[in-house]
Image 1 (cartoon, rainbow, N blue to C red):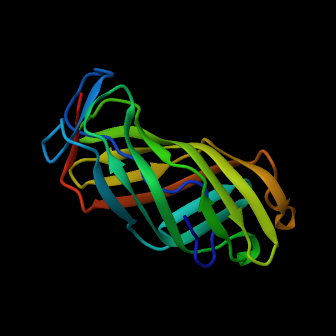
Image 2 (tube, rainbow, N blue to C red; image 1 turned 90 degrees about the horizontal axis):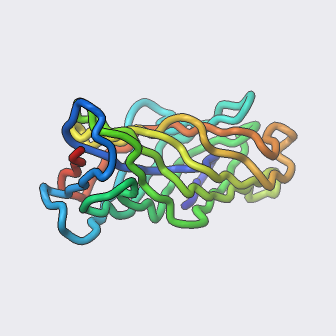
Length: 204
C-alpha cells in the first residue's frame, strides 16, 4: 500500500458487513455475494468518495488528510461469527503528513473485515482489524508504524463502507518534528464505494 505524494495513513482501507434485521440476533451472520452464500471468496475493488480530502487521519493535535484512496481484497460468502472478508492492498493518494511533508505507506499484512453487529435498516456495523502499516518520509524526516483496528459500517443499499473512529496506535516513531509520538492514539475516516463485485449482503 502506498501513499504516492503527501501521505499519512494507518489503516486504510476497506471493511464489510450487511442485509436485514431489527432486533439483535448476533452471530452467526450470513454473508452473500450476488445472493449466493455458498460460493468461493469474491474479489472486490473500492474507491473513496466525497469531498476532498476524502480520507482523514488524526493524531492528537494534528489533522492530516488524503485526496482519495483505493482498496482491494475478497469478500467471503457463508456463515460467520465475525470475519467477512480481507483487504489485501490499499493506496492513499495525495496525502499530507506533519508540516505538509510527503510520506510513503506500506501495508505490512492482510487486514481483516469483521462484522460486529446486526444489520439495522440496511446498515451493519463492522471493523477493519489486524491493521499494520509502516509510514516513512522519502527524505528521512519522519517514520512511524500504525497498528490496531478501526470501526465502520456498511450500507448495503448503496454498497458503501464508511470507516471511522479510533482504535489505532502509533509506535516506532523516528523524528516527525516531535509532532507524532509513540503511543499516540490515531483515528481514520473515509467512505469507500464497493465495485467490481456483485451486491454484497448480510443476513442476521
